[in-house]
Structures are given as structure tokens and as C-alpha cells.
Image: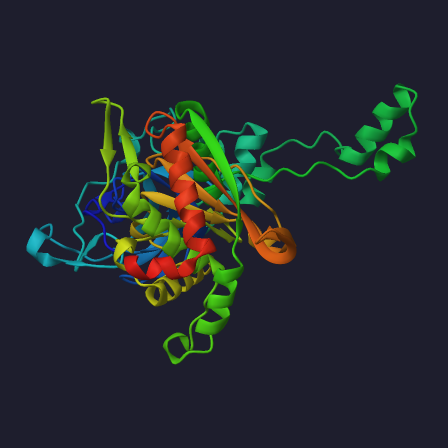
Length: 442
């Protein structure tokens, strides 16, 4: 993945050979990224294009390569921090002497950003003792991320702490040495027990209770939360449901799995539901639309970027299949499997996750009959597939055991009225009740 031009590293501090790498534009108009982890530490030697960190942005994890070589002087962010594009990430001491800065022609693409072949360094004169100021500098003091965090918690100004780490960086031990010891701090459990005794409660009972657990909302979950909040606040949503006898669809899937055409493919009911939904969209294109707030217009899309909601260890991801209306059932099987595997492995790119026009979520895999999902911002509707199971059903005026499922449709009522939503849902159900009717639309 490349970007739209990472800034040329800038000399930092009073040493002309200390270069500062800023978070580059990661593409897709993203304004920031969450730092997942560092691959280097203060004092490490890095090579050109060596991975120095991982950043999560737009639900994708991207490896950041170093645009220059040298020794790490300072890490300017901690894992979990949200870093704006253009903000400094790391400072590296580079001892190469370069008289002129590289031109645009001298730079070549790297994994993320445009790293120069040989980075420019300026020869700024170091300050003499007479030039030194007695007040703290406006530049950030060099310190390890752990030391910086501890200093913040203790309210200590790092400029007044002598560093003993590499290149004079302040370490955790340096920060601790700057704190006067006033006595051992009581453990949280002891504090709770003392408070309980003062209030007349059983201290043993208080101590035995499980403590609260706080999980930082970062990365995928943070962006999902923001998107769902925007959905609930800005989209007037309505829902409709239909229960479907999909016995014929299950029989068709059983037959197709034995054919050579689907050999090696994972043919699931989701693929057939996706094919039925795409055929229903062709008949009711109004459900595949977006709301243009600025111009107060409904933008109907004549292509379908079909989003497939995928549960991953890092949260909910919705990769979309570009131009899914052109895909056959066999191709849908392959693309859905690829999208799910890519999302769960953390290899989905921003391009895979952005630009969806209509989404399907499958809660049936969790044994849930149906649900009321929120519409993804930028789309008009989302289809929910419930569990498929055998139930008593009236079939040809007789009670029988049939495969059934419930489909739910949530939609933006500004673009889709009840009639359109109901017609789309009924058409999708008809295709699943009699899947052979899809043949004329494949």
C-alpha cells in the first residue's frame, strides 16, 4: 500500500542529524491512524524501509517502513494513541552527511509513503553554552514511552529529569528517582477494605468481588462506534421482516455441492441469499442508494458494492465485493470466502472496506433468528439473514417440517418508504422459496 506522499523527514531539535518521521497520508482521505505497536525501541538501529510500527486506520492495519536509516532517538507516540496525519511519530539520528536535499526524482516508492533514497540533513550549528536558555525548550524532551506515561501520571516535567538512557533519553528509573518517597502506597484492595470498614460493610466481601475491567476503545471498535453513532443520530431508520420457506434453496445447495463446478468451493446459504438479494436489487434499484445531504438528493447506484459483515478478533469488519451484480453464484462463493478470510486475518485494505452500497449481515451463524441491524452511513439499507433451521410449516395446506429462515431489512426512511422496502424483501424471499427463478437473472 502506498500513500500520497509522506513528508520529507525534517531535522528535529538542535542536532542537524536527528530526523523526524511524520505519519504520512495513508490514502483514502484518512485524517488519522491509531498506533498499534512499535517494532523498534529507543537505541535500536533501523535500516531504510525497515518496518518500525503498525498503524490501524479505516479498519486496516498498515506496516510503516522507515524512510531513512539510523539510530532511534525518541518514540513520540504510545500504542493506542490516535495520531493525526502529519504529526511526528519517531526521531532517528542519521550520521550521513548530505550537502543537498534529494529531489523528487531521487525518491522512490516504499510500502507506505515515498521514502528518499538518501535523506537530506541540515548542518545547523549546535548552541554554545552561552546560547543555552534556562527555561524549558519548546521541543519535546527525549524519553521512552513508558517513562513519558509515568511522568504524566506523576505530574513530572521531563525537562527537569536527567536522562540516563541512550542519547540521554529519560527512562522509567530516571522518573522514579525524581519522585520523593513519602511511604508505601496502599494497594487498591486495602483501600477498598478500609473504606468498607468505615462504612460498616464486610471488608472480606468487598475484596473478594471481581474488579472492573476497562477496555480502551481503539482501532476497529472506535471507528465502528463512531459509524453506528452517526447512523443512529442521522438516519431515520425503519425495519421489515419476512419468514421464508427455503427448503428448495437448501436442496439446491446440497445438489450443487456435489457438482464439479463447485468442487473446492465453500457453498453456503449466505452466497445464495446474496445472489437473491442482488437479483432483487436489479428489480428494485432504489434500495441501492445514498443520501446527498448537501444537495438534498437521492443518489441511486447502478452498481452494487456488496458489503459482507465479518466478525473478527479486532471487531466487526465489512469488506465489500466490488460490482457484485456481475458475479455468478460460483464467483460469489469464492469472493465471499476471500473477503471473510482477508478480514479475519487482518489483511483487508481501506479499499476493501470503503465504498459499500448495500450490506448483508448473517446473524444466523450464531443461532439467532433475526436482528435489527443499523444501516451503514453512506448506504440505504442492510439485509439481515437469520438462522436456517427445520420448523413446523404449512406446506400445500398440510403441516410439514421445512427449512425456514427470517430475513430482516433495515432501511433509511428518507430514501426507502415502506412499500419499496416490503417489495424488495418479498422479492428476495420469492427467489429463496423458488431458487430456480434466479436462472433468468444470473
